[in-house]
Amino acid sequence: MATTLPEKKIVSAEEAIATIRKGNRVFIGSGCGEPQHLIHTMANSKTLEDVIIFQMLAHTLADYLSSESFLKRFSVKLFFVPIRMQQAAFEGKIDYIPTYLSQLPQLFRNNQIVIDTVLIQISPPDEFGIASLGVSVDVTLEAVKSAKTVIAQVNPLMPRTHGDGFIHVDDIDYLVVYREELIFLEQQQVQQETSRRIAQYVKELVEDGSTLHVGYGNLPYSLLSYFADKNDLGIHTHMISDGFIPLMKSGNINNKRKNFMTGRAVATFCMGSRIAYDYIDNNIQFYFGTADWVNTPGIIGKNDNLVSISSALEVDLTGQVCSDSVGRQLFSGTGDQVNYIRGATLSRGGVSIIALPSTSQDGRNSKIVANLSPGAGIATLRSDVNFVVTEFGIAQLKGKSISQRVIELSEIAHPDFREELIEEAKRNHFIFPDQLPPRAEDLIFIEEYKSRLYLKNGKTMLVRPLLPSDEIGYRNFFYSLDQETVYMRFFYPVTTFSHEMAQDHWSTLDYRNNLTLIGLVQDKGNKEIVTIATYAALDEEWAEVAFVVREDFHHMGIGLYLLQELEKIARKNGFKGFYATTLSSNQAMIGMARKRYPQAKVEQNDDEVVIHMKFT
Image (tube, rainbow, N blue to C red):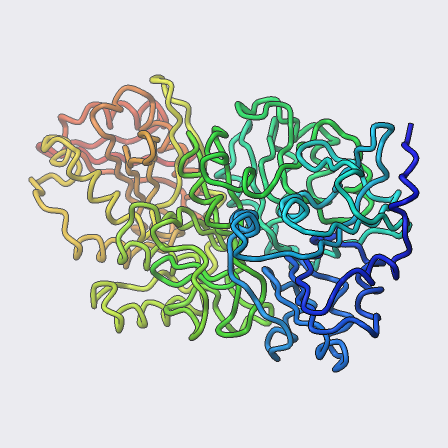
């Protein structure tokens, strides 16, 4: 049962706005929770002048930024530059204050930003006089606490949300009752095939039971539509959008496996449409907290298996991330991207992902760049970045050197730009002068070559094609082998694995006629290569095959499995059979070949054995 509003506090919007004085500093509630009716009334007031307006996510003010009269009377300072404000920011009509969203409440508390009046929007209060800030708790709650005067628009269309955003009518000075639809956030379309391919790679890094953070932006939210095959997901994020709702309704997101705030989707605000607003209304599954609690790394890191998915405008070859500007043109804001990335680092089993298309929409510019555009702001430091994903693959940067990062990132750049990026990296002295560029080809077809094998020791082995970025892992694998194993593979004692050897190997790989598969097993935070299997064309019908399995992974069926996988790929590429040369003492190889190919021809020549394995 709703309470009766205290009549002495109920005023018209004009009466409430008239309490704002010359020189006042006004904070406006954020995002889709902004009180549009109060904003229009203030902007159209002829008596107000020299007023400073602060807002985090602004929408309605964009309607007035072409008015000279408005700009003479109001100074607008934003903590985030949305799409509708980008041109105004470029023209100097508004000020941008770079800050982390999570630090804004502290700026209010410490009077580093002083607020005289706050304009907010609330749900109708209940029988106890308690209303809700609804879709905008974030920094708005602290602004209310810090302001000298609180003006609230009471809107029956504002959802009542659970969490920290409750406010009593006794703490409000003026109440303006006005019903209007909340702002709807229209998500811009992301090229469907690009987002589908990016989602394919992102999902490789998201295990069932993970807790998701999804950063602000069209691409991260579009990826959610591909998560219907994930189970028992949780939410700890800054913003709830429409994209989460179908996954919650279907049970893919249920928050049951969260170890922190179990059963609750944690966020600071909501921006979407009636789809989201109606779903969060009085829904105990959601907890809307303040930004300085929800978005701090220490709190984020309390969630085991936290997966942070955010986006960027540019990533340079060393891993620096720009997400708020292209050059000097502001496009968004600092937000809390780095907080979630650092929170994922603190999370047990946590992962952070920067996802972005490889090029601009017109395809003319690479978003993986040798150097960030002049004037670009670095939102996330190279030392913080873990995974970067484009539609061409996954680059893992954490713990990697600059030269390794160059190779990883150039591999996932658009094929048209890979050679140019490598040449720029050479000029920057980031890599070896003789470094070969990744193949200038879309290697999406090799995704079909990936598989998983569950081993007898309880571990899972990921099998995938070898890439140039695996050079260090390949080297580590080589030096982990016993000399006897190396001799079995090469027939002579190889004692050194050089950069030149790796380059020679990459130069022959085409993933059709010449292919190498590797088996990767997780060891704490690192995936180690434990086996390598190769085939190389001898002619149009026959390919030579070879295997190496690390000694501690012998007798687990790995060799036979890899032989089967190589055959599948070889068949697709038109081969009729395999040929292998091994030592007569390598009975494991000989036995495996006979087991897989009972009709195999085995010919012995002194210490060498030649095996012909025709596909049936």
